Length: 322
Length: 253
Image (cartoon, rainbow over all chains, first blue to last red; front, side, top):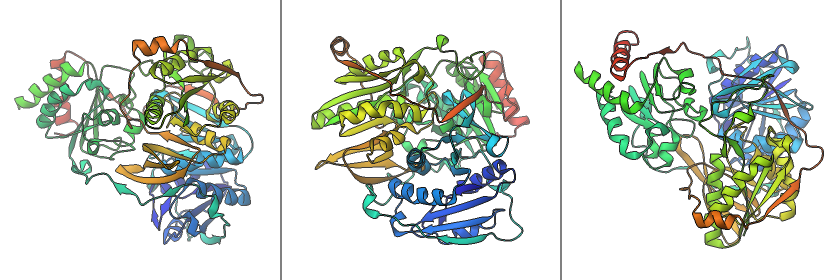
């Protein structure tokens, strides 16, 4: 049996859960799939998820699971996983999963394969693909030791709309979990946003994005000129915003914004997976990079290997011709 | 404050990995190495906490003899001493193996605070810090953007997805995985490099019975999901050709 751990907060489902269900269906090879939803309150999430072609949706509500803490989730899920003894426990590779899943696997002395982009084979003979060396290589890995094996799927690895729906809604069953609130050591406060997002890059038709290849902030001027020539917004990969060269609200990727513009021009961006997840849905992607092996070319429609400081002025001149 | 920083030595970002004959690992003899960049931010944060609250910063690293180079660099930047869990079998170790290698010696040290980077640039499991916290029996939090110590306890800013954050209170001792970009890195000074030569690097044998939790059965250059059209030529030629294709084929302009 495969157990999918849904991610939700007070009845709002994280859509990556659907992708994870699609991943579980790819892995199953006839094994039954169950989904577990945990939290303080789960609202309509269990009944929504019951539309998937799965054996059962399990719900565990407990006041100590709201707000989320890694200690609370680890304790609750350990009890549930031990009770159900699945072959695999699958999760979306979100920040929250990264916060508790290693604890859970370590406490149970089970393997955890993270950031999985694909499955080959089914069931216990399955191997999992995951990026290594900043996405320059893809590894096929097999979990070692005894089941259950924990697996987290990279966001976007499977499509939410690929989930097979059932002919009738799956049964929704309540679970009771005993939790010792005194053992939760983290005390979180309410989430907040640093500043009002000044630019909503998700609405931009065209984006010119820069990465480490820009080398120094004094080169931003030519990027602005190019963006103007394209009629585009300027965005960046994480290192540029970390260095303070552009504000944080210009950041594309897992810790920034996710965008799907008509045109995305990646300049001097190597294509680390954390960036790619935020832009790979763009309609047309252009990559310009001096390193022919840069992973950004894997997702690009048009690629140019070369020095951006030579190509950008030529592009500006070409665009201004018309 | 007795602060530990876990540092991993990884192949340089610029290095294009080449595979061993059996295609289950990279040719280490071709590789150049550097400090895992996220760990450099963890070290910088540890040094800043020491400057504010006093104490010692101890670099902890598990790996083959080559790892000494990144340990020396951390000592040159200002760490006080180091633990090196040395074994050739740790060169390809997964997160569980590294955590199990580090845990016994680190438990003995009884650190108040343990900092790690949030993931490594080589295998990138994003697990080691959290597994280590579990093995040390201390609480943890991940992807941290600010660390405050008030009245012997932590108040930390954790990054959530999509530009959201939250404050978390937690007792010490604890482990935090540090988000890259939390601070501005300092570089080693000549004085620091000289001073580092006199600092202690304690070699610790690897504990018995380490087991890997996942086996790499194959490594490959990722298969393309898209047919990328490469455009070659002089800057003027590629610019003209790209603009033409964006107008006529992609209709993106």
